[in-house]
Length: 70
Image 1 (cartoon, helix red, strand yellow):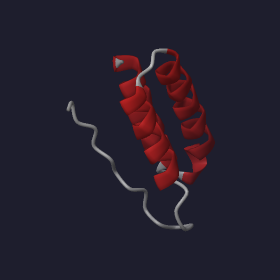
Image 2 (tube, rainbow, N blue to C red):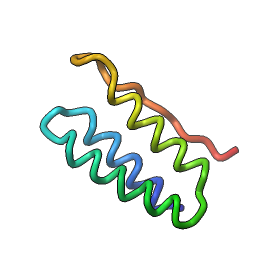
Image 3 (tube, rainbow, N blue to C red):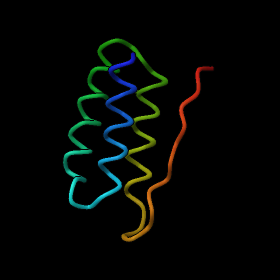
């Protein structure tokens, strides 16, 4: 779970810059595959949310999402 969380955070950071957006999507894709493999549904939803927030209008700042241990 820690690897998925770290990769999600790393991918989120990479998405914040147009120059590293593709790398961010790649890292998030790997995190999503790992989360799905181990049944980490909450983390998978978080990853999808990060991806969706990066697809806002061009020039809009990305939304920061903080994951909690609920």
